[in-house]
Structures are given as C-alpha cells and as structure tokens.
Image: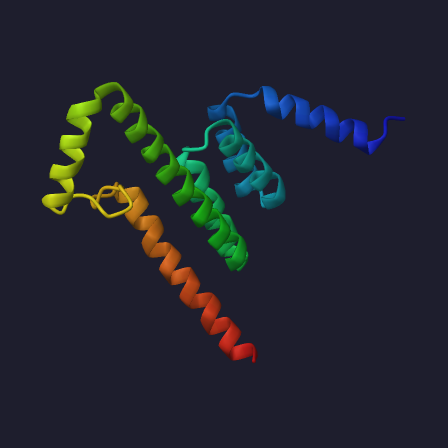
Length: 151
C-alpha cells in the first residue's frame, strides 16, 4: 500500500514537469469539473514558472471571486500588478543602462510632456493592467462594505 504523501509528492513532481500550456489546460479542466483547489494549485504553478502569465492571474481571480474569497482575490490582483510593474521597471533600467545619455533625455522629455509619473512609470498602461486596477478598486470596496455590514 502506497501512502498518500508519496502519491501527492509524485503528483507534484509530474505537475512541475508539465509545460505552462499543459498546466493551463489541466487547470481549466479541473475548474470545469469543480476541483477548484487543484485548479488553483495549477494556476499558482503556472505563475511560479511565468510571473507575467495574465491568463493564470485572471483565472485565479475568477475562481476566488466565485468562491467569495475576496481577500485572496485582492492579494492575487496586487501580486499581478506588482509583477508587471517590477518587469516594467527592470526593462527601463536595462534600457537606461544600455542607452545612457539618450535615456536621460528621453526620460526628462517624457516627464515634461506628462507621459511619465514621478515614480518613473509611464502614464499609459496596458489594457490588462488597467482592468486589474479597476478590479482592485471594486474588490476593495466590496471588502469595505462587507466589514461595514458585519460590525
């Protein structure tokens, strides 16, 4: 007889070997079968492999929202936004390092034209990031309302 922990460890190893696309397909299948905990694990594995995988973040948010786990949904939104902001800043630093003088001029010009915020992030955001920010506001309001009702 094989113990449950050995079976779980074998499942984790086989899940780790799957490609991101396979993990996403498997997670969606698990989600449709109602095995939400397993689907959530797969989505987290996808995010661990690719910190900018928008579909995995979106599915996680949806699963948490449907389960009325608003704090986990809020945490997922914040994690997704942080991942995108960090990636953007990393790309900016890399470009600035490679392009020294012209990077400084470009950055100053962008600030003067109002295309850049004080923290160095561009004012324009990808539609996905804008949607997450909007969702963040709605979830924060839902949590505040829920707290107001309970007290």
